[in-house]
Image 1 (cartoon, rainbow, N blue to C red):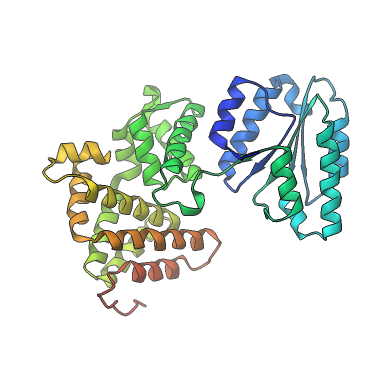
Image 2: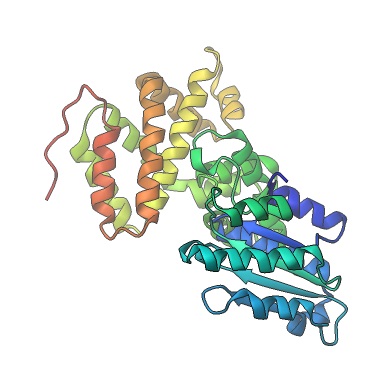
Length: 358
């Protein structure tokens, strides 16, 4: 059966109970935890949750005791929820051991316990293996990552899902966020749900008793100086002024900005520049601001920069920004080196880069 996006799965849970077994597949930690929490809320009354939720990892046990627990009547509860994480570890096993795991799961799936929801979890699975093919056909697979994650730039489904989840994160925090503000926040933070959750926490404190987050709040607290800094950085790169761009990046890092945060802000800005290039000429700054969903001052900066940077350069820039984001999130130690290399790649191809600063 086809995989179900996490956002659709969460909507399905609102309408009724889940299947007796399913697979959470993907790398997004926030989405995974949200699916877990909603499953528990849907299946179990609050009083039963301390003893009716069981967690196992394939790093610490094999599947036999997990299935034994699944077939055992829960104590003091009508139902139980069992999580078995790290299923991807099976891909390091021998073919014989992996096949034994598949047979155990197949036997359980044929006759699942009616009082158990068994939740398998894996960050990724090789779809060529018999285990992955079996799970795809035998159980509900829920994608716990945003649509288009592998080609992040400009994917409309990914952005739409991020906006929906931004509003859900705000609701969990006890506040509301209007749709345009949610879209602004998702765009600015490159649809990174963990970072969005952090900023929602700050915004919830910022708005206080008002309990409602607006686009002005996002501009005031989240965007602020960083947005104008990335416009300045883009202008420096467009002019081939790499040395000054490095000085600006170093200053932002010293002020507490992170490497992924800078890359995400630049990626947001590049997408806005592409949007600005598609708009008809003659719009006043307020019309432009409405089309780009940003403040009038930032929209005017976008229009000016969009005229100076060719579309081909912006598309190539999104590609190298995505690669830099992956390098930074893979655990590299020298963030500055990654950013310095990124700046070289973002320079116009007909401009020779200055010598690195030391």
